[in-house]
Amino acid sequence: MLEARYRTARALPLGRTDAPAPAGAGLPAPAGAGLLIRPAAAEARFSLRLRGPLVAAAGLPLDRPINTVSGDETRWIARLGPDEWLIGAAETDADILAAAAIADLAGRAHALVDVSHRNVGIDVRGAAAAIALNAGCPLDLGDAAFPAGSATRTLFGKAEIVLIRRPGPVPAYRVECWRSFATYVYGLLQEAAFGVGPLERAAAR
Image 1: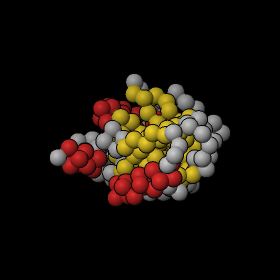
Image 2: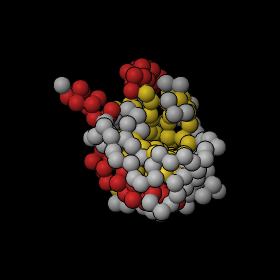
Image 3: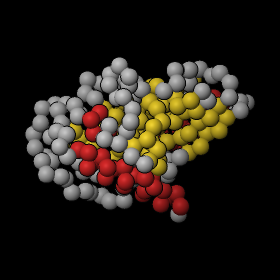
Image 4: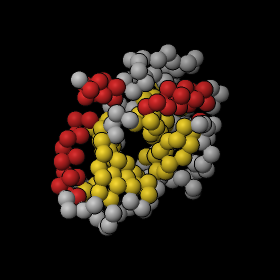
């Protein structure tokens, strides 16, 4: 019963199936122009703490520099500290990924915790993405300071988040926050979008 509730919450991270689009949503815009803000699709997420060196677990690299993200949109791992990682994957791969990680970590002091019910992801993409994020985030998000492949803990407004910048020709960010802050973070991003540029789309999945 509880797991069924969690799975429903993952699929509807902001508690609704649709959200009204602000004025201008749906207007055509050049590829990469404007701004897209939307809740991420349902995903499994794991918090990993590990002591001691290990190159990889479940096929994901653990030896990359701190504050970087590896992988792609279907399976990724962000190193947030010397012994801390946040892992994301398709919800359908949750059990497979967990089993593979546990097998690779056997015999080592570690903690692998499923935090899928705790976290919500919000994708922010487009030429104006950094401007919208800087409405609530104090970090320098320029290419030199926060290039593609970066990941870090920071604040957005009054909420603690994990901010990830994905590789690609169009600026694309993932905001990971606790579910209890999701509506606040999403609403603040929507407010920041006004006056920034043409909004490609702003509807919850």
